Length: 198
Image (cartoon, rainbow, N blue to C red; front, side):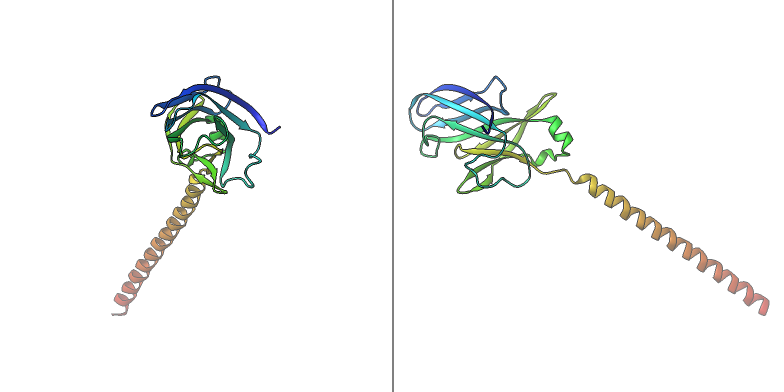
C-alpha cells in the first residue's frame, strides 16, 4: 500500500564486471544503479520502489526536508552487500519545481541510507540537469531503504537581517555625523563669544 510506483530492470552479473541497471521508463526518481560484482550470480533483477511515506523498515524519518523515500532491491535475500558488490552508486533526479517551491539549498541535497538502525548521509554529487530535473549520483555501501533529503535555503533570512544591521549602522553613523556638526557649531559659538569678550 505504501508503494507509489516501481520499476524493474534485469542484468547478468559476472564477477569483476561493472553492472548497470538503468530505469528508463522514469516511473521513479532513480535513473540507474551501478556496482562492481565480486561474484557471479547470473541473471539478476533490480527493483526500485518509490514510496508514499517512509518505509515500514525504518522506525523514524531522516532529518531535513524529504523529497522522496525509496527502496532499492538487488537480487534475492541480502545479495547486495559488501561481500558481493563494491563501488556501488545510485543515480537519481530531483524536480526543479520542488526545489523552487520549498526554497531548497541545492548544495544540501543528499541521498540518505538506512543502515545500522540509523539514517546515514551518503557522498552525493550533482552530475547534470535539464529543464525539469537536477541529476545526482551517490555512493552507497549496500542497498536498503533510502531517502532523498535537503535543507531549506536560509540566505533570504540572512540578507534581511543584514539589511537591518546595515540600516542600523547607517543611522548610527548619521547620528554621529550630526553630533560632530553640533560640536563644531558649539566650538564656533564659543570662539565668537571669546572674541567679543576680549
